[in-house]
Length: 542
Image 1 (cartoon, rainbow, N blue to C red):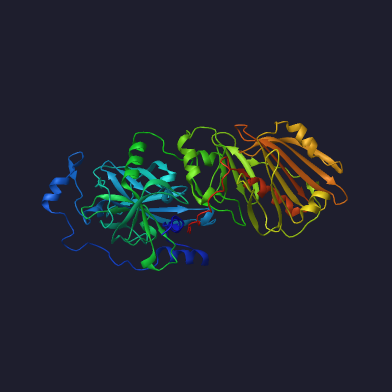
Image 2 (image 1 turned 60 degrees about the vertical axis):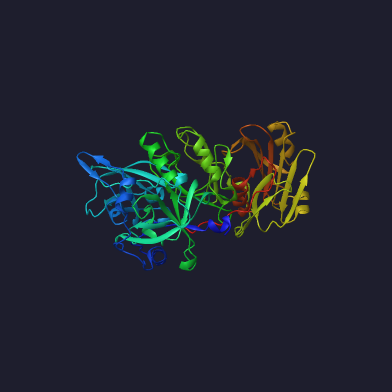
């Protein structure tokens, strides 16, 4: 099985009360089916007295001593989590969504998936067989490990201990949780393999593939051994449309999870800007990036006015989502303090926005006067990602711009695209794009913009340009020639000023304005000059 195949995973959070036809279908996909194993396990699955004495670890809370020694006893540590969400992928009406978790310390520390609790409107959790919900607080999350640590009021809880050995293929395991959001169940399986992974929404060095069947509400629940020790945290399954015997199930390994718990409890902020997102390849709706599925209020992302549905295309001078994984994104947030004012670039509903985390809220990068173009027409319905022959320049253009030219000039690589390049270059009647990236060109923004000006354009507006990834100057020329077309040019540099980027786009109709936003949102460079890998398939997200 290839890494691309392994990336076809879905979030396993369970919708419990969808209220439209679309949500009804999602509910059937998420929580449908019958578990083959439920309730208590057969006798003989517990550990022997010798094994119990050898591995015994006593966890104290006051005068109580509690120790889990079997899959059956682990039931008291498993937590049912019930949330309500509004907005983003969930629509405008409140939707109950459920997941699982488990206690890892008798004082009331709980682990679950970050996608279970990020951006929720309300949160209840029920420990073991309890029917009342203690007050719960999110102590911290690690976005790139899809883990959240919660604190609950009370003491004397039954915790699970971690499986300290390397989980070898063939090790018997059980997935515990509330697959339908209500009823507790266990499913049996075995470890298939452990591996490092960077996929569409996590990047960790310990992912476990196993065969214990998972359904929606299992998300965040423990994967345990026969003696009730936690091997990992269940978080995903492969494409739900494949047959059950071909479906793969995945958990985040105990080494990663225990480290995240220790860091958060010690007060060390985990890597997070307050979103739950998934890497998406370029498609007809948006450029490649991190699609935001949920945003935590009062977080750096929330304060920057990032919303569910946005596509984060760049952060801290780094284009993210390349190759269809969150690897670059996770590297950035891991090496920066969450309090840093990091520039971000966001694509929202056909517009390019920029701002800073813990600084300035998002604002449009471009302002388009109504006089920029007068003709109307059907919008572009499809886009294609282009790169020059050196693999240095990347951007998206309308698929209709079928005439494309990639050149290595004396100044650097250049890309041209238009419906008809000759007509684009010799007249003012055809839309099109030119991009030049040069390490040899001096950054004389005013001079270069003046050279790009066309004498037949009546009105010119100059201004600064900053899209969160490149900054410099821009020129918008309107009323060009008899067609009254417009031309928008940018001369900009990355923050390290290692090269100059020159972009010129002609707009001859209303739809070209949207194309310009898309060109700039997708525009990025590859410093190594090597073509990027094909994007991994996006996960199916409920």
